[in-house]
Image 1 (cartoon, rainbow, N blue to C red):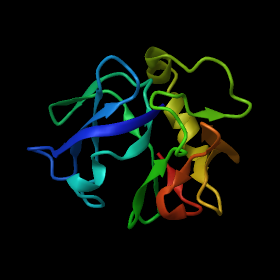
Image 2: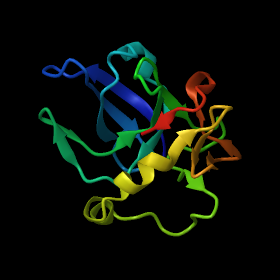
Image 3: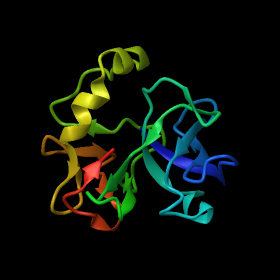
Image 4: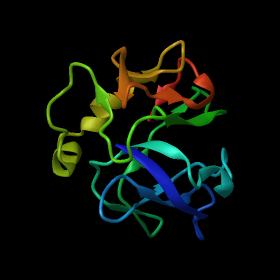
Amino acid sequence: RVGQIVEAWEHEEADKLFCEKIDVGEDEPRQIASGLRAYYKVDDLVGRRVCVLANLKKRKLVGFPSHGMVLCASTEDGSSVVFVDPPADAAIGERVMCDGYDGEPASENQVGKKKILDKVFPDLRTDSDGVAAYKGVALTAGSGKCIAQGGLADAQVS
């Protein structure tokens, strides 16, 4: 889903984690923890539009109840990690799509039990233009493609 970070702070006990409240078009913002402190400052996060994996079960990360995951692209050596940005015209809460995969999204239980992320993540990468894609098919929302910040090319997306 397309989201917007409305609040962010550094996790008190985990050096690598930010805690965020992200508007994904639901009644209340989702609380999500992201291991991005080595790459961003709190001020970089608030107001930023992001792509969110919203069909993950809530789980505690160092005591913080995280209910989703922010999509980022990263270099193989981990020296660069950047957000995957939704198109500017994509509405908050809009589903991020991939042509050819038009059915209903997997439920939180299905994602966990079937280990769907273990099957999807190896084929989720950016192309030579930084477009996030699954098996070579672009992730889209609104009228455009989801692109790694700065056009980070040939990177793993997770």
